[in-house]
Length: 102
Image 1 (cartoon, rainbow, N blue to C red):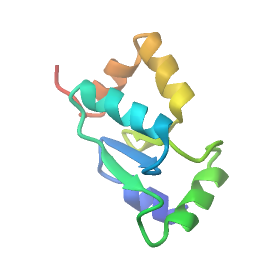
Image 2 (image 1 turned 60 degrees about the horizontal axis):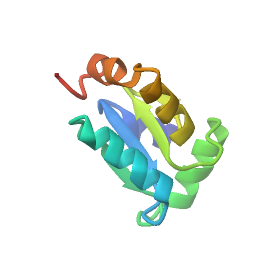
Image 3 (image 1 turned 180 degrees about the vertical axis):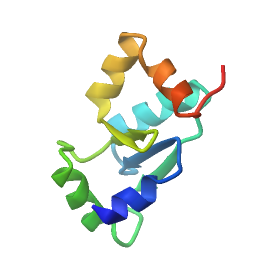
């Protein structure tokens, strides 16, 4: 879990993803559409991806991707991000984290 904490430190938005995951693609597109520039880690493309995925699961990510951190806090996966968006709570969260300025 220390690896995950270091990877999200000092970054407004971090997405742990797999390059072949359609839900990860959708969440990346949604956040980018608001003007956020998330740091994206494709777990199937980095050397320690399996280890990071296990750490995400220990943090409660089920399924493990997409896993979204906003303001260094684990928000969750696609369901949580979509719910925040539909409840008009996602943009204020992104603003507080300094991910967007509008």
